[in-house]
Length: 154
Image 1 (cartoon, helix red, strand yellow):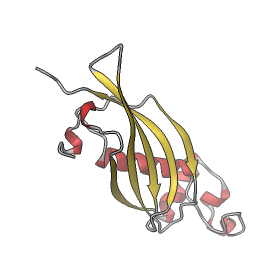
Image 2: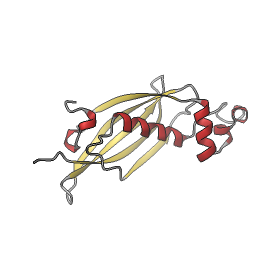
Image 3: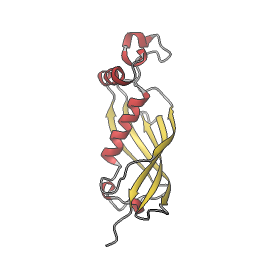
Image 4: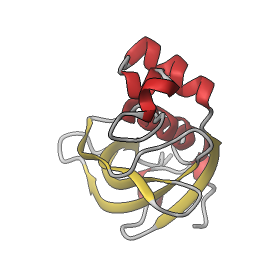
């Protein structure tokens, strides 16, 4: 990559390119706090009850994992000079439980890049986005789309 990530425009994303970044510690307090507010199931909110769940212990909500991924993407991948948001995501998968003490990182692979026919000042990039734990195991994945402005020409 020759253009710094925070200065990238649509043209700077290359199909097949992969980036890895982030180091986020999952804490029991954050797992419980998030779950109490957004996903109040016992295996997310109660360490004692979680012991007898199918997970055998407290696990983070998949939605929390997605939120952590988003934070890491904003901090290390999404360009503030050209990002226009996302029209959506596909194929969300929670592949392994995330537990307190896990450290998450993200791997992003550019799958597709297409310039808009109707609005030639922008394009859409499709990305495979994977959250990985400290052992390199993929715990969550999805295919996301990002809309980016093209580099100004004048």
